[in-house]
Amino acid sequence: MKILDDAQRALFDEVRSAAKDTLAVLDRHGAAPEDRDALETSAERLEMPFLLVVVGEFNSGKSSFLNALLGAEVLQQGVTPTTSRIHVLRWGPEIERTTESGGVVRCQAPVELLREMELVDTPGTNAIEREHEALTRDYVPRSDLVLFVTSADRPFTQSERDFLESIREWGKKTVLIVNKVDILQNDQERTEVVDFVRQHGRELLGAEPETFPLSARRALADGSSEETSGLAELETWIRSELDQDERLRLKLSNPLGVAKRLVASSLSSCESALVEMTGDLETLELIESQSALYAEDLEREFGFRLGDVDGGLHRLENRGQSFFDEMLRLGRLPELLQRPKLMARFESEVVADMPQEIEARVSDIIDWMVDCELRQWRELQRLVRRRLDAHEAELSVDGPQSSSRKQLLETLGRSAQEAIDGFDRAHESSRLAESVKRSLAGAAVLEASAVGLGAIVAAAATTTAVDVTGILTAGSLAALGLFVLPARRRQAKRDLTQRLGALRAELMGGMRREFEREVARSQHRLRDAAGPYSRWVRSRRQSLEERRAALLGLEGRLAALGDRVAALAGGQGPAPQS
Image (tube, rainbow, N blue to C red; front, side, top):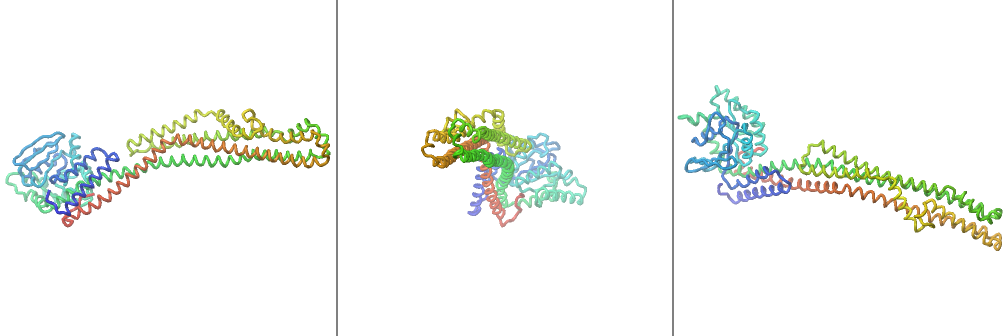
């Protein structure tokens, strides 16, 4: 590494800091180990020599090309795949090879070029042994510059195209070497092949690549000049274009390119996971909106049904008022003095079938509320089933979170099914009826637990009639003469209105209290069942949004650093493809 000036050192430190911060964000959100290692290694190599990695298919002449470039037969070469390991070449006083674990061979040679950079020979991109190709793919992210060697007799095969696309993903500057041009018949064929390679390289890499035709065999042949082999042009480019400033730019671009690629990949995964979360959020919103609509619909329908009960009490009151108007007058005096007959007539004409009607209407309300709760559990089950079906159909990008989603949905579905299977309609109706009666016990003439609601209503109405007949048979009629009946009639009507009004208020209020309590109980059960899934969805969404914000921040920071790195040395030299 060259000695850096203050501005370059500051930029160097910022790039290293950005790589470190990218690692921290990726670690927090479960980055793949191989991706994390690629970035960490790339950042560590900032302080290490410039790394030039040679890749290509086997038998494209990579090893021969490197030997020609070094001017010495450092690497084994032949017509069969000879490179099955990563060979790292560095300067040393004599040629020496050391095999390390992990498929790496360290080679040193007394070559001047190796004083300024390290060269790497890789297994073929179409290696028969897949682990050999994996070694090459894993090593590319460490490179500061990639020399891609293709053979003039079969330029740009499909495996080469695929590999070049992966190189582009890492944002690596790539130089194309067209080897074995000596097998071509004439200059026209050579021009056609080189143009073909350059054109397809531009399409695959997204920028015009430096392209060098050469013959490694000629360069290595005794007495063959570098000019006729084409190697001289490449060496000139390395000396003039790949100077210290350009190597610094490429070296700084290395961790930036790796970080950009990983951030872009993680951001894409995050966005996809957020899209997938849309289904969960919609399901939650539907569950919550269904619960709210359930409460609203019950409130509206309950008002109508309660109005029927209230209407029945009003009709009873009207009949009572008419009864007192009709009976409490002089013409009815003989009947008024016959208390049993008067009471029987009051019960027949005023009370009539009102107790049964009240019982029936309240029972209908209770049955309706019970059925509504059952429908709510069935609707929850339907929504969960729909989300599970959609989840199964999705190609999940959410990794382990996908399993959590499925497990929580299945648990919620089981809760709904258990609620449905265990739903005892008769028991729920009886429970709710007893709750209503208990709420009225304090206002009832009789113990609510011993009689039905209809009997409570009948007792409240007939109490007024009992009071009237009690006064009439006490002899006060003879003492007060004509004045007692009008006064008593008015009093009886007031008493009836007050007693039935109090009963109506208690009955309506009590039923409403029980209704609201029952709705709250039902919604509480539903929220409890949906709670784990709801909490997971909200927590997961928040985590993904925080991750996206952090990644977007990194993306902007890395782009800005990339622009500053590209401007090094006056902006000379192409920036790595992105």
